[in-house]
Length: 332
Image 1 (cartoon, rainbow, N blue to C red):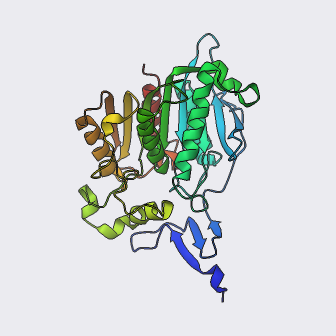
Image 2: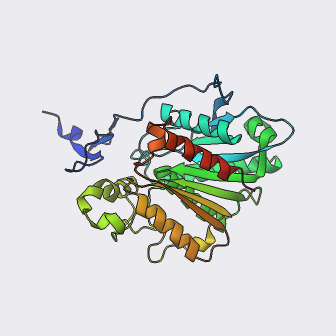
Image 3: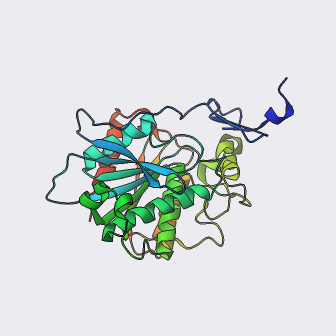
């Protein structure tokens, strides 16, 4: 029998009759953590076909927050859009170095001909929210500092300095990473990025993890089916009162208005069999009605589940999703 200090505090995802997933993460009462998925990593590379280069950097030495940078086969005569990307995984698993994320960003960079930085924010439960938000904001501020050479030479990154058009900076993320992207875009509407060094042009949200106390759409038909979404937030952000915290529910009573979103374009990607589909549509519709002065678009992929493009990247629908993202990232 295990000693009391190795008793399980909780598992993610929690067990239910609808949940056939393996346990992703197990947290013990002594504070130790076992991760069972999302732990594989691949090194940075030169893609043999697409020619995309990648490398790993430490963006914030004080906290050790790192990132993987991607550079396409570039035309040196012009600078390129930049995508600052936040991976998913319930705030607790996966990294930019995971095979699925490395492959996805490689494909997107090649298709869109952009520069990308995939952020390795610190994860829960060791680092509960809002730490991931703060890490991601710090990286975004560090990126912005390159726009007017405000980074010390020792901390400067040549791929950002030499190849990025800082008038075309985008945020993007899937699942929990989409949640992070939304919260940063909202913050950038209230606070300048490195004293106005850059302004965000757009944001792409892919199956974003947004939730709320009130059931909407298909959520109302079988509440137990959504037990993972119910509990993920409260484990990730122990200081939150409930699932109507504005960081997880942007349309909750008292939440900051979406009118203050700090970008001009938004693309929302949802999938028909994704349990978060209705939240994506609610975000889109609420943004349209908010008075925000921008353009929001939505694309739904029927008969597919949550972040299907990561797990089946060579299917036709995944390729269409990549092309739609690439088109969005090349808009002015």
